[in-house]
Length: 207
Image (tube, rainbow, N blue to C red):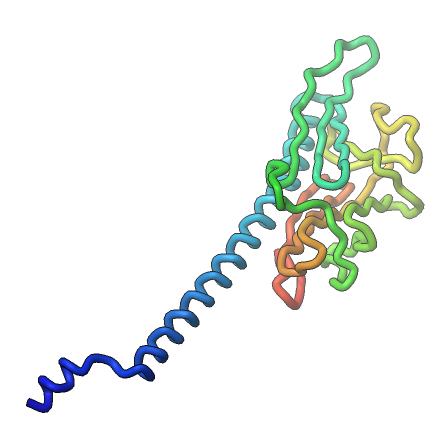
């Protein structure tokens, strides 16, 4: 009779409250975990877009034997353009690429002043940093040469000239500036054009 009485009595109010509290906690963990996962996926996709464009530009420059200009336009656009020789027909236009496909809430080029520089030490004062390997100032006119190196000039003139050898090292940061967990960095070594990517793991830049 005692066991039957317990079955008929059901759960007490305290027991129900405990069950509800457990469900709420689990749901909260799930939501927070899902949000963090979505942020990381978005940040990785934005970083991948930059890496893909840079590597594509380098490969195109080598294979076509023509310099390829890379233009970064705030807040989230990357444009490639093949620089033809004098007298040649203009090269077909290459569609611009936008971080996260320019979707609402997509990430952008963003500086993270509270975070240290990447292991490459190419600068992190701005979202996009280009520093001549031999010192001096650099503008945003940068391109990959037919040899695969990454170069630029200190001014607007002559940036597309064949034989430009002003090597430029670069760092590009993307993410949400209010959320360091979304911080991503891409570096380019001027001499070789090598592109590397990093993410902020909460304590350091990890490749």
